[in-house]
Image 1 (cartoon, one colour):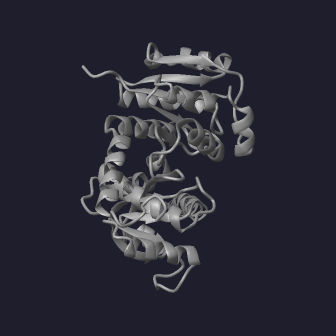
Image 2 (tube, helix red, strand yellow):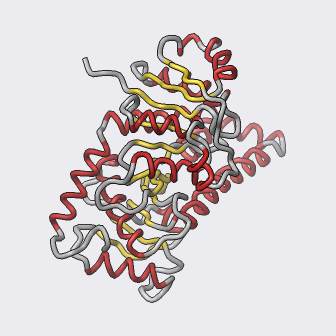
Image 3 (cartoon, helix red, strand yellow):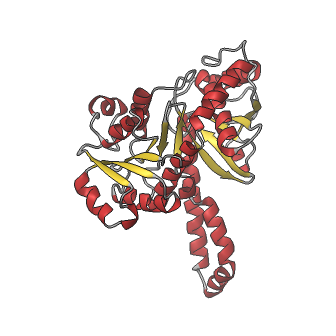
Length: 348
C-alpha cells in the first residue's frame, strides 16, 4: 500500500482560525480518509477543538507555537522575524520532508516570501504565481497570477504562460490549452508596453504554446481561452470581483424570491435549478490556489473562507500531491525548453 499523504496546516491563518481550520479538516478527512495532518499553531486553542472532532482522532499531530503571522504584516518583516510562526514552521515541514505540502489561509505576501526562500524555485522560474480556476460558460479556465506578484514584467508573464500551459495540461487534462494575455483590448497595439513585449516574446520565441493573443475581462467568464495570464494585481482584482458578483446576484435572487407569495411559489418550483446554479458559482468550490513555480506544494486558501472552503483547499493540496504535479511541471518545462532551443525560456 502507498504511504498516506501528509499535509502541513497553518492553523492560525485566516479570519476565523483556528476554528474554521479544524472544522475544515473534519470535512477534508471525510473526503480523503487516508490523509494525515501536521497542525502548527497554539495548542491551547487547537487541542480543545480537536477533542470535539472524533473523526480527526489519530490523523492529526499538533506542533505547538504561540506565534502567528498577522494579516497586516509586511512580507519582509514576517520573513525576518517569523521563523517560529505557524506559517513558517508548516513550510519548514515541507522542506524537511515531514509533509508533502502546506495549506494556509494566512497573509498571502508573507506566505509567498517564506515559501520562496525556504522551498526555492523550480529551475528556470524567477517568481511563483498563484494559479487557480474560474467557472466559465465552457467549463473551467485556469488563471494566474491571482495575487502573488503585484508588479510583473514581460519575462514574468512569459514564465506564467509556460507554467499555466503545464498546469492546464497536467491538472485539467487538456492536450493543447489555449493561452491569452489579459489586456484592456484585443488589438495588438493596446495595453502597457510590457504586455505587448510579452505577447511578442510568446509569438516569436518558438515556444510550443497555443497562444490566442490578448483577451479582455469579459473573455474570462466566456471561457475564450483555457489559461488566462495576467499580473497579480489585475488577477486578484478579477478574482475578488468575480466572488463579489456571485454574492451580489445571490442576494438579488434571494430578495426577488422573497418579494411576494407568487415569487415564493416560483422559488419552490425552480429550487433545484437554482441550487445547481448556486453550487456552480459558489466561490468556496474554487477555493485553494497553488503557488506555481515553487519547489514544493503550497496551497493558499482564501482568508475569509469557511470550513467548506478550507476543506476544498486541503483537497487541492491532496490532489496535487497524489498526481505528482510538480514532477510533471518539471518534465513539461524541460520539454518546452528542449522544443525551443533558440529561445532563452528562463529570461524569454
